[in-house]
Amino acid sequence: MMRETGVRLTPKEADELQNAHHRHFEAWTNAIRPLPGAAELLRTLTDCGVPWTIATSAHRDDAAPMFARLAVPPDVPTVTREEVSRA
Image 1: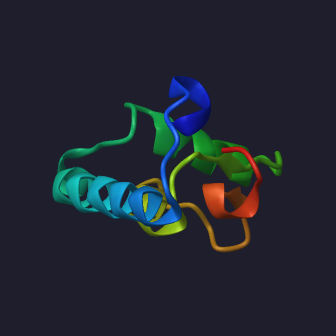
Image 2: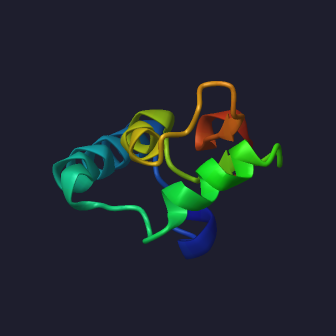
């Protein structure tokens, strides 16, 4: 957010903002659904031996419920914001 807005936050403010975002997102987690056909597409790719991955700007804790809804196999690589310098 700082990069896009130019607003500078202290590390404490940035942590507070991230925590608030997580709390609000978590409240909506059960309402979020994958796009129709998404899980079937991923299953078909897997069955056909086509490698695939998921990359998201979400934190792993926030992305995990969607990975579960999509039935992402544990051996499929996933990339979350903690693993890159710019999500």
